[in-house]
Length: 184
Ligand code: HEM
Image (cartoon, rainbow, N blue to C red; front, side):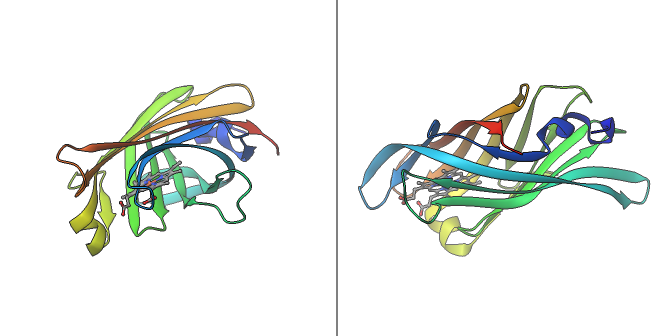
């Protein structure tokens, strides 16, 4: 793909992992923090440009889903867009988690970067997190940070979602990481 997509060019396509994903979250059904291995499928479709006045964004329209073992329905899904502004090096990931959470995370990267980080905070500007009323009271997402590492026909992520949860006095680190390989 041409370099209009900058560091996102290498991520276009279809991706899968084996069960090497690992989620750390508080399980309400078990009443404790659990480490859960998972497998993942992800598609990223290129589009662009999207013009905001003088700004020209190129992006990937993405959908990802994660499964524990051989369950039929994924236990976590995301839909959204990755975006790249070649003029400024701004890189963004805007997505929805169907718990009722929206995230616009962002950062700065070189056009040929193979590692980059995007961040958002609850009341942050310009990158922030929206959530529903129940979560705002009981399990609020106060910060989100993801580092992406791109290899040859592989990419991986390391993600830290910081939650303010009623179950804990201190902020809780809900973490996820996985490595995906190209399947299309
Ligand atoms: C690979 C990515 C992710 C996976 C596999 C995942 C999985 C999970 C799991 C298993 C739980 C525990 C639910 C329970 O048993 O009670 C959970 C809770 C939660 N997750 Fe995630 N999660 C991921 C990413 C995220 C992200 C990116 C956010 C927000 C930006 C998020 C926000 C939350 C919140 C707010 C809860 C707490 C819900 C509650 O306590 O009522 N998660 N997640």
